[in-house]
Length: 271
Image 1 (cartoon, helix red, strand yellow):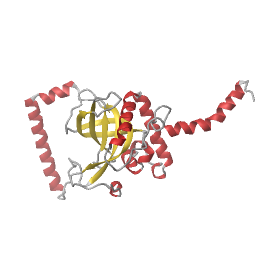
Image 2 (cartoon, one colour):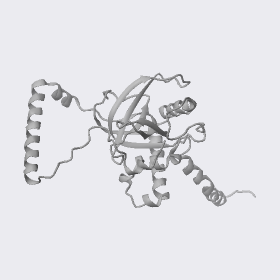
Image 3 (tube, rainbow, N blue to C red):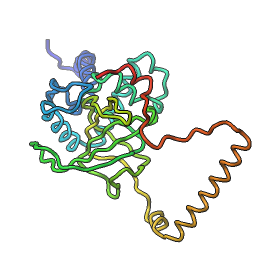
Image 4 (tube, rainbow, N blue to C red):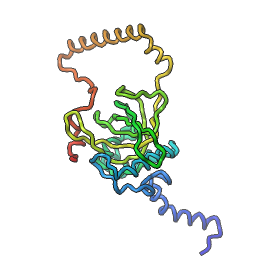
């Protein structure tokens, strides 16, 4: 059958939409999903990163490094919307409150090789030489990022570069967002010497705005800093004293380190 008129061509295109659209949705956008081009068969959850997983690890890092950041972020947003619509418990959850960390823990197969966006604060950031790879990656940066829904349990983010001014160490870095590829749930030892699990995200870099120069100069001025610190401490002491007089119950402090006990959504997992 020939399609000579614009109307016939339009009808043909409409007939193709149901075939093409699911493919785009499944792949998270053409050229973005890594499932069809990177062999992820050796990747296993709830285990340490193994030698057999190394090729997929570096191929995902290279893909995250080379792909357009806007394209990757758009695909991650589309995947999140798909998860909301396909999961009954998440349909009524506002987009801004989507529990990305929990969903990664509970459904890792849905995310493997797919783009994911996490936002929160970094509690640890270190660098080390990369292992042998064909992607030309020399240095890697490992960050622990805590999100709103992770209950102080971190996700592990591996990056190939850092934003200007981002400090290494265990300094709290707030207001960071990262989009990368989910590889696996990997194990790490906790303070209570038990095995815990963390999502591993492979990305290029963080989205982060460092403090401006005026703020840095303020922090570097010793007398100004001491005066400000003294004022803050005095204010905090006065506030706590006032609160204790009004409400004599115990005041719970915000945890400054990783919690000993896992949240409910982690307790059912075993190595």
